[in-house]
Image (cartoon, rainbow, N blue to C red; front, side, top):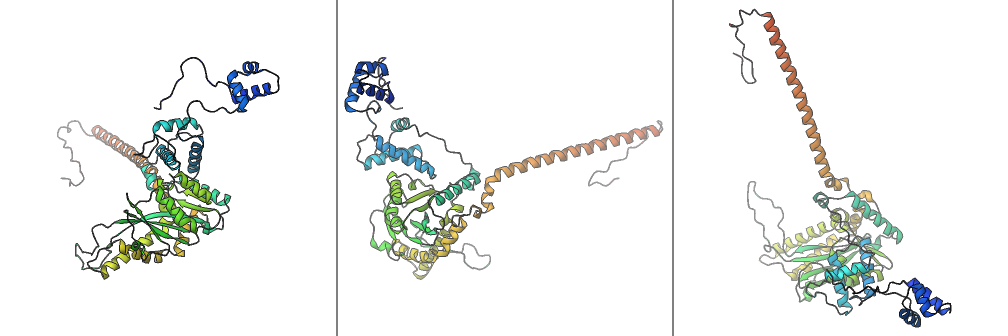
Length: 469
């Protein structure tokens, strides 16, 4: 919990309002009341009234020391949070603490935040929420396993409504060159042996591989609905970059080095925006569709940069990229197929050699030139219902998993009801048979002589699978 100073005594500080102070100063300036009289009439301390009157200051600021970041920086964070929420990137409490730390470091503000974790403290967050009552901590809607594995109509409908609103308000209808999709995928420095033809019944058919498991390199891809691809950017783990890493790549391609991992983080994404996207974007407002990864939204400076350069970021709903993300729908599968085919061909033509970063550029270039086509890009945006705008482009089977629980439950209920009906019918049949048997026995006893009853033999009943005597 944050430390809160509580003033001792009964005196209440700054119990007056700005309106009371303004009226008191006005009464004194118009010579209707003296300072002491105005102070008593409007409930403002006389010393405060004299000081504020001399400085012509009626603004009532907060008591005590100012916050670590200051009002202007905190207002920037609030604006950033609201914009993220509007575009589907609602930040967590940890995200907000990370924003505060990064801003303090970038602006050179003295702070006592934790430099090891790169986060502002919980006390700062709690006081920040108190200073900004327009924000509140809301619990995100829980996602069941069925919704996580499939699609939810409510989320998808909300996404298409927001997409239509953005396209309409920013006059992007009929401008496929202004609507982009960006995503990343991983390619391994290894070939994947494919299917082979061998003698029937053969087992353990060997295929030559470059190694057990190769290094994974992240490839950032981006294209618009017009079919224009931005040159790829590759992220490799390491510190030192060699010019040879880019040999054979498509013109304009770049290689970024990252010491921690080859994954895309917020700094790399921001660098990609500056180096690759903005220099190639058309003049005017553009829409950039992304998945909801934290690396795309946790940098305040990046969001302001997007506003300055007329870039609107829109987040795709969680667990829907297989149907709503154009690059996932029609490009990455082709890219990986062509890349690993190129790897297999290299291993075949160069027996005994391993795939390294020096060969990656040429292999990626061959695959990229075959996959990054206008047809692939246009069909990707069309299949995802973006350009042309068509929410009905999403197939019905994409939503089947959403109703799996309901269908299974309904089937179980129906089966149970059917079993109950069958059991009731069987009981009725058994009861009727028993009643008939009793009636027959009673009729026989009435017609047969009593003297013969001791010598009467009861015939054996026939049972299934057994022949009668």
